[in-house]
Length: 231
Image (cartoon, rainbow, N blue to C red):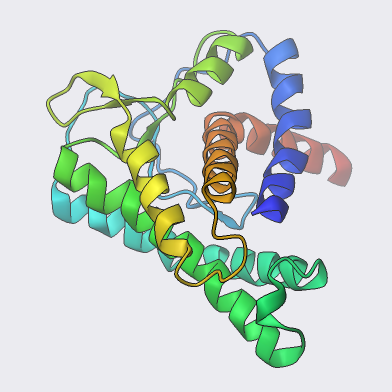
């Protein structure tokens, strides 16, 4: 979890801060333009919508489809490999041990964290509570307003009835995922540790939202820099 936090912070805040301070507007989002399936060509991006309007609710089946795509994307597997390696290097869970057998345990639990978290926050609770698991990109306005909108969607989401409401799916879903993880993480099974893990997960999801908000801008800038470098 700590490595996941550092990865997102490392790629997010220097870029997002530059955009927030320097970029005041962005082209009007085009709902018909297909979304990139991955951010930085590795982070899954199946649940991003380029705009809230016109709003069309998802069926329960569509919510499970999004969660499944996020969970079993090759980018998710690649991230689990990286996080498992870092966790073993730092001996994050001593009970897992070292060597190949220890790494297998780290990899299995790391991937389980992703899958369970995605299923709880994008499928199970959104279907039960009739909430929309998608991230709705604002795409226009000042950088600061877009940054605030991205962060705020962790706590405020859209209901299937086309009304805004508290994001119970995110909070309860991640809380459930953390509770389940105590079954396969034998160390530090305390309330304090659970609260810390929940806070980290919400922070990571918030960082993910900001990346999703600014990815089209980042991608355009990278494309321009690449073209300029090849001329």
